[in-house]
Image (cartoon, rainbow, N blue to C red):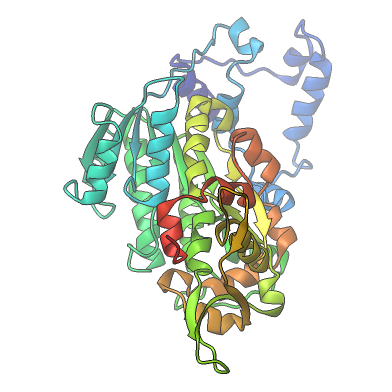
Length: 433
């Protein structure tokens, strides 16, 4: 009955199935009928043990694809057409973007607007439609962008935001949720429930994160438990639990996992002024965590690459149903990132091709001292570095090759830095004109 329901939901037709005995199946005039009959007889036998939990463990960290998602992914197979189940997958044109004024949401809005394959209409959700950030989103394309007031805490407003929309993008924010993982998880659940209840949303792209708790347990990474909830990284695990919840709902979802934003290196490595004890002069110093902490490869990608990735997913959403895509364009150490920033931003060349390097020192400091100097967003970096240091485990969920397949124009860190050398905002963060 559940299989027939999946077919009916997808193809829009009631599917009548006729159960066959093993003998009737073997007698069918199709190639391999005997083999199919024997296999079905074996699967029905009590000696045949199939357990989803065991399958999940064997596949870890990959996730098994649900039958509903598998059916959508393979809906264009000739066998379906032969029995009258042809599916012309309708385009997604109108997209509700939750968290539209944040870095990810803004990138998605820009990516959808820049897609020349179709004219997306965007519902940019925000708690305050009169904020400067909201007005800036509207100004990107006043005709195609509609500001919609929605609050993650208010499921009714979420339902109104997606009512009639074809697709939705969801990202939640740990810090705006008061750094309470339970609140952030509920925020995501509210949007997921709203999408399922809408009956119009055909696909949801959910920007989530891997469960570091699960990775630690299954791969024995030896991470410490931090925070009141006893999770290694609460901001990761809240999103991961919401993704598990989404897999229980009758809705097509693609799960994207973002790495460290390349933009954050400007905050993490911004030079600071210090007084030289020997000369008394003021000097500019770029602090970098010393020892092995500075040599931990950090997965990164510019957040601006997310928009094109999401646009490509919506364009072929049936191919990505149920898939988890770990986005990353580079793995670099903090020391390597510091050297790249020095080379790209602190080296100038005049019209006569004379090279002038602005003096900035790179200084090794302890990881704890480095983290303590940073803003709130960096306070969890110590635990994040402990996770990132398990490079092989991280790479099980992240792939540069798969990212480049989805976004061929995505750039590794150095190339991205070079392309943004004249970015006024980034130069100001580094103390440059």
